[in-house]
Image (cartoon, rainbow, N blue to C red; front, top):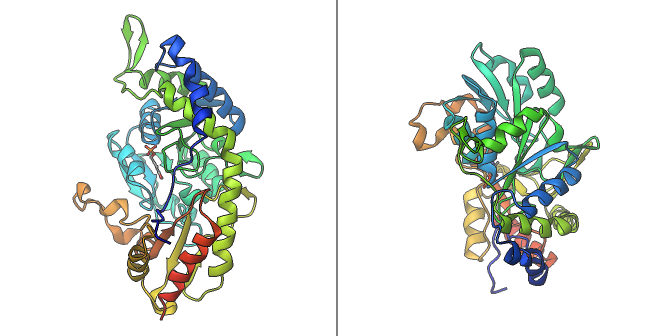
Length: 369
Ligand SMILES: *Cc1c(COP(=O)(O)O)cnc(C)c1O
């Protein structure tokens, strides 16, 4: 096996399919600013995600950032440090204060038992993450938010195509932000979307993604530029036709991983959640060194020596980033700290062969000796 196996590999349609999709752009010369591809992707996603409202954006980060801005929030946002930089940055860049809630040791999503203790009179919202595609306790979070009149914005970057009790995952909370980055289950090269309940949020997002322009002679908000262009929307349209099949192929790879690694002492595999239609976005494994016989670092290095890219995802925690100058106390999220020191996500993508999965597992298990 001479070739490298990276942790992920972007899904792409056949070249010809994409060419057909973009051909019309050479007639219209309409390349961005909510053109036909943008509009048709927006419509298709409503159906696919089972949601009423979708606003497309240039990436998942701007989806988070502009949603917070559109809601006009002030004060503190309860969130999780076990996530990608984007979640915390979106909060801080809006002048809001992140308050870090610890995670559940099984699903790695926000520990709902610990949310209420963090609510103060300054709390305005909760921003949980469906991390690895593991669904948050949306019912309990909804109950808490209702009780304290807080907004809920889900970072759903990992949760594309999932449903809970038959309901599209983007339909929970006030808004859910998806990422269509090249490395995600569904990609539009770069891209993102917000699904939301209140249609007013849609008009606010529409303006904010276009500099806050309200009309030809009126700029009513200090917006950004976060419009999805036509080439990205076209890529999204193509990839959307194949995403269900791709999720099936991911599922096969995950089952193969499980056949080798399930029940191995000292390894903790991702939880299988009841009532969730999963998307098999990631394959995280937690290594308990003393029981397993090798540390996360040793496994990571051994895989790297064999040309296999695993990722320490999510390490470090966002509340330890140097850009925050030790403002936050990492000891307040001990479970997140424990997991982030031990977790490794193994390669997973639709094209990953069964032989590659076997080979990866062989190397992981051989680390014990
Ligand atoms: C990828 C990701 C984002 C950001 O999405 P982009 O499209 O890359 O901007 C936000 N949150 C999480 C958890 C992610 O994994």
